[in-house]
Image (cartoon, rainbow, N blue to C red):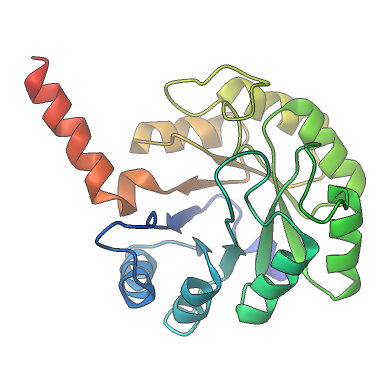
Length: 225
């Protein structure tokens, strides 16, 4: 196993992202949050966009998992080989790519994209939404499998917390490949449950780095009491 990936075993990865139009949508702000997460114990940072990847890579010492979102429907997480290569050039130690079978911008399959990235020495994280996605990503040689898209592709119901059922199924099927739990890990208890279910590592984003969403959790709880 690659040393970068081995260093994530049993650890917390923090996703540092802000949506377009939000007050924190600024590379320097993202870099500051990433550094704060690193000080808090994050073993890696996941981030999106070339400017954010470059800014964060220059601020933290832990590995950076980079992606590039384009669009809002279908495949929008690193949707082409060009996007994947750009993420690596911006400084990503691992490139996260949508691993579903949906059409990609350049017409290449996930397997073809992964092979091209491996030919350049890059590490690839497969963002999966189902068991079938994970199997295809495994067969394609993805270095990391992730439950990132569970509940968002129509293949599985949207669970309130992390999709531990899918996580356990993928872990059991592919014990020789790191499987990371990502998606709706909102509490420390959720993170612990994911590790107990066999996750190699856990990614937390919104619950740590998105104050707008966290605030809505509290305001709704107060309004609905």
